[in-house]
Amino acid sequence: MVIIVENAITVSQLNRYIKAVLSADSNLKGICLKGEISNFTDHKKTGHFYFTLKDNSSSIRAIMFNGYASKVKFAPENGMNVVVSGNVQVFERDGTYQIYCETMEPDGIGALYLAFEQLKEKLAKEGLFAPEHKKPLPAMPMKIGVLTAKTGAALQDIINILSRRYPLATLVLVPTLVQGENAPKSIIHSLKLVQQYDDIDVLILGRGGGSIEDLWAFNDEEVAREIYRCTIPVISAVGHEIDYTIADFAADMRAPTPSAAAELVAPDCSVVLQQIEGTENLLQRYTVNHLQNKFNQLKSVVDRLKLMSPSLSIANNRNTLEHLNKRLDAAFSTSIEEKDKRLLKSVEVLEALSPLKVLTRGYSITFAEDKIVTTVENVTSGMTVLTRLKDGEFRSKVV
Image (cartoon, rainbow, N blue to C red; front, side, top):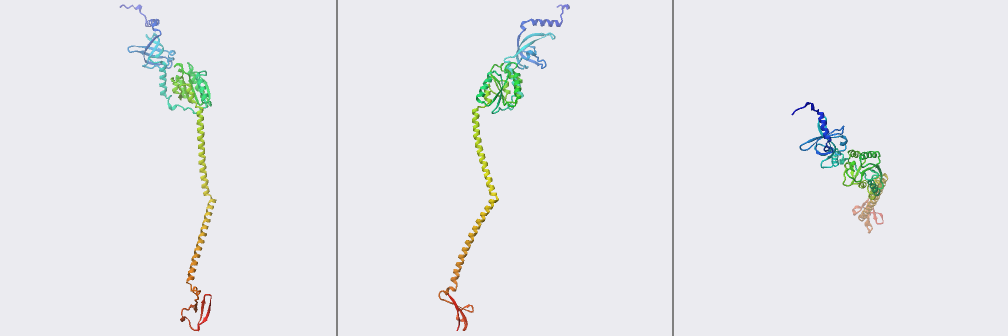
């Protein structure tokens, strides 16, 4: 082989030529390429993606500039199988060719679904869905905030149900975009706005059904974080019963539909009235029983005070004294009677034994010198004696 130096070209000329050839090849424009991501780098400052796509035997460098990267719904990761579309071009400075990607989709799974699962996992790890953070709903809210489109069917459903079930509450509408590119910012703004009022008891954030793209604003990360930070209990009511969004997990309660949210947030007035009547009856019974118990306690205290009062003590002592006096009088009378009887009996005995008793039967008693004469030897001639009869006495002289 003969080398002709005059015909030699520079490296730059060669790379420029190859770049021109590849750029002119229509087969390398809008090409779809699938492979596994490796060496992925997300430049935070520029927003560009740099990575390598590979299969079992080959690899190619890839780049996705910020304008396209910002539209990717999911977070690319090493080891993820994706399908990209773009143009193959030569990086003239290094003499390498690479694919400049304009779109990226997961291989075998939808991009939105993957983005949903990735964000759900991320926020769950941070604790945004923790049950202990959920705020309880008020039992009887008096002011209910509704964040939804002012012309949507969801609002009308909520109004109809609240009017029928719970007309006591005041409904505060905060018109909010619930679909489209500006919807996340609108939702966040409405959440911040409604928290400036301290008399709103609960919020319903929702919209009617739609495709996953229509509902995507409720899968926004910043929307979820604002719901988590909200100081007012939030009910998420997005789409139909089968639709789940990130907002559902971040909210304090999920309702399958806006209509269901209205039923959850407000009690049925008829049921409330029954509960009030039951509570009223219970309160009446409690009040009567309580007052009766207090009356009995008061009566017991009054009775004890009466027992402890000086006047009652004096009266009781007076009664006791009178009773003792009566007993003493009765005992004294009984004692006198018994002594009279005993005296009379003794008198009778004495009379029965008295020598004078014999006189009544015609006998007499003779005394000589104040002694009873029992024998003639007791007297002498000339002695004066006294003879006592039943009706008198006389003196005589012994001869």
